[in-house]
Length: 100
Image 1 (cartoon, rainbow, N blue to C red):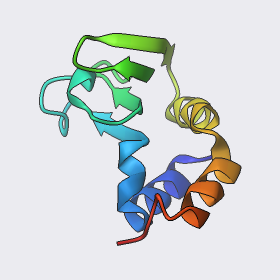
Image 2 (cartoon, helix red, strand yellow):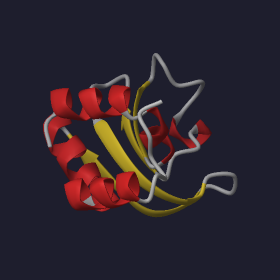
Image 3 (cartoon, rainbow, N blue to C red):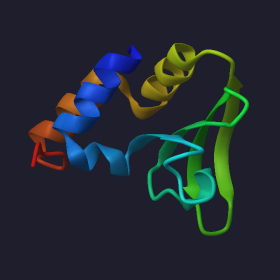
Image 4 (tube, rainbow, N blue to C red):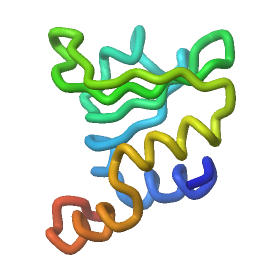
């Protein structure tokens, strides 16, 4: 998964953001913990990327947190955590994700 394809999918399927989301220090309210998404790709002010798979955002509990120097590696890793194209197609078939 590359960045451009991820952004196109995120824009096409707005409800995808509850599963996986890309944020920067500029468009996040304060930090990655404010997201309601299960997986967050967060770009820091130092141009590093942190992929966090959350268990409970309110209490700061996460299953995994991995740092990357490259945006494409971070998005690819997060997409694999999400389940990839197969899981996306499954969610679309179940109508849990729509393009509204």
